Length: 135
Image (cartoon, rainbow, N blue to C red; front, side, top):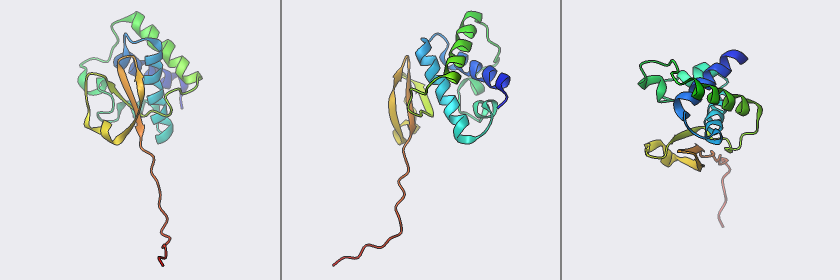
């Protein structure tokens, strides 16, 4: 992972998804992004820009930050997340508390940080093909 590119894209994602949130919530947003990168093995940029994964990438006309203090806070949160423990328990999804996306019903709810609710995918339980004999 190219560190400079990764930190830039992670900072932009935090800025657009969690600007104005407390640092804990911003770091949780960052962990979701990092968890997706680790799951996919792809770059931070490609994970963030994947079609309709993060709302700002398909709803904003300009991705250029306008609030420099908020951008600096987002950068701080990105560096904390990249160096720290994932306290979200492996969250891979989040949404604002005021929306109710249909996908949330198929996920395991982890908790709420700031104005966002966090989830991870349900674990897959594999069942062997062993036949059970009945008496």
